[in-house]
Image (cartoon, rainbow, N blue to C red; front, side, top):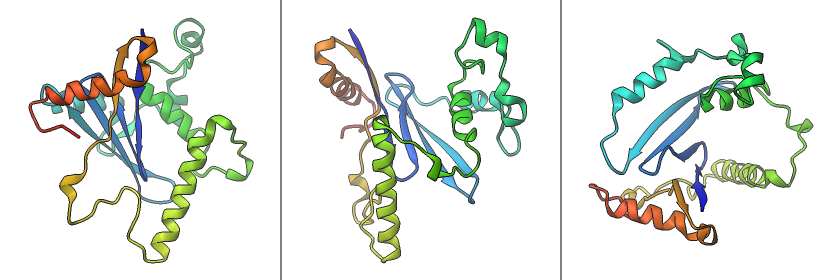
Length: 195
């Protein structure tokens, strides 16, 4: 058996991640200045309605109000604990993957000096994304409207996807089990979720 997980970037600044076989989260990161962004989370459930209160309570357990600043942050070394790292976790920063992601993003500093980067073959998606972003910026500067991720005002109902799914199946069938899993959950969904 093999586990296939499909996560998508939604150009220019969102990602859609499977939380389980029945629920996805889309995180939209919206820049508000040169060093900060807002992070919006949208949940899609293919079975039961999203428990909004539970999702908010989970977020508030890790953030402070009124500004939703993370409890684990650079000021407290993201909750790093060397004893935990020796005995329990690789990072020593608890079990919340959001804290790990936050540390990875913020540890470079607010503005990364790209001239010191050394991208490798595993960074092909980063290079491709940056080329797309630069091309989109050029199109906007030239007054063009045909941009990736922009939905026509005449046909917003045509927008579907993206597929983000966790699926398990036979190793030899890894390349189709994710698509079959997504098709099955969409077909049994109470709302029109077909692609």
